[in-house]
Length: 304
View 1 (cartoon, rainbow, N blue to C red):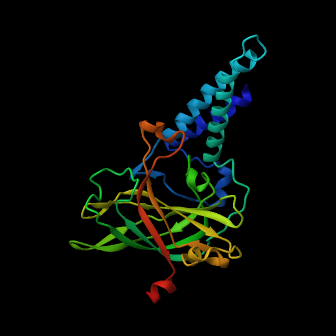
View 2: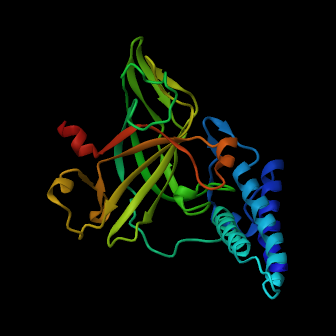
View 3: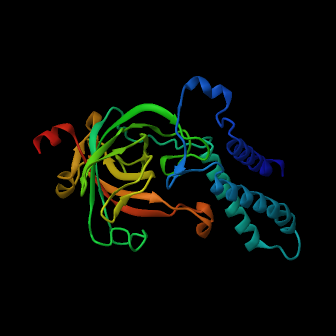
């Protein structure tokens, strides 16, 4: 029973530390000089990670249920279905909390974009299937925002509970971006950015990884009825090892990265919306489609 409760106590201690502002990184990790990045969602800092709180409560509830279910298995009327459900919930919640805390890591090696400099151009506007508000970008207008981005090799600590899409708390590396500008109806609009983080994760297919990164925008920017919300914006695209043969139509869309890595020159653009309707993301984040983006290298920008 003690082994079951230990992860719950650890998660709750992390929640308390986060709520009162105590450092979530153990003292022995301070020497690693990991750059901290504040967690944010839809422009608002989160003092208490509600998703982790819900997961911790579910872990405690399932652990308590298992303490009754296991002894009942030896009786004449065991609750096999209830035991299976409690086991599934306990395993899922515990593994998620441990990943958020940076204890569980993926052992597979993914491709790296460390040192890669490129232009990421946001193409924001209404897309099929988006759950953005009905009045958002209803006119069909688009907002194009080019950003100079550099994928650094510097490890960052995202704090508890980290970003699950980037492999948890301590799997990400620093993304350097200071912002960009676009021309609106009233003239040039400057959009500041606070940088972000990135990670590449193996997909399970030979030589293929998915690149995920985010950029934090401190203020909203708008053009007509299209807006870039303040907060964290998420990007995702695929990349392949240079030795992996790609179909001709796909090969024409890739951008060459460091060490021969082939990165798809386009991808999806989303923001996160977790609230009471999905238990603050306890069983997965709700991502709203914000548009799409394209990648280009400085050489390609010059050719254009």
